Length: 227
Image (cartoon, rainbow, N blue to C red; front, top):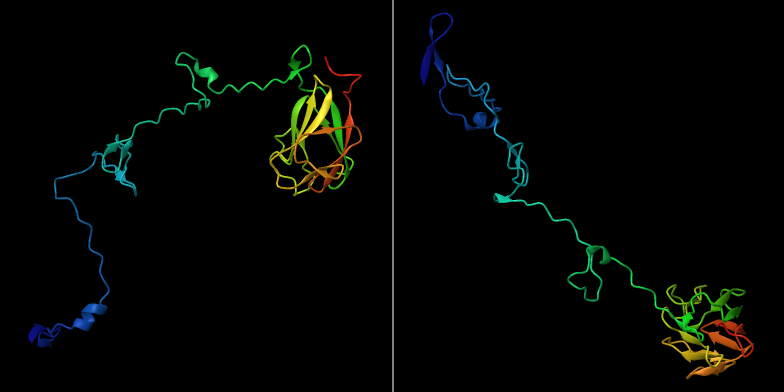
């Protein structure tokens, strides 16, 4: 126990025992900010740069430092991808993205390109796309649902493969049309017969590919062909 003088000058008993409960519930008091010693001023001094969440130094001259003080170098500009085939060492960079030339079709006695020369048609007479027609060009044309093929049957017939379902060939030297089986799992029929090998295609023939039936209409024949 201890005593202190009260307002009236008489000694007053003071409880000096440590009350742990009161100490726990006592709200924390803010500590006063530390003041610099007298006669010392930080005015005019540069504040140190801050540090971001990843440890990079911000606001200083070391913004290009990775965590762990590893310098960050600028990435080189992306170079265009080279063509798959080997390029010569002295070939200029401007040729790296040059498109491959399109394959030319040897057509007619002059050996010109057959691109754009219509040799016949396949007209859809039954199934999805009824009433539509496909132009048959020179050389060999594949039928499939893919837009990358020369003869695209993409009218909703899912039984037609996305690769080579059937091959249609125009032989400009013999002036005849042929069909040959492709890679499709669905059967192809010419006038009701399964196309299991190369067969001659004549005017008016009915060709069934998947669930689609097409009628063959020739343009080039024994009386005319492109020269």
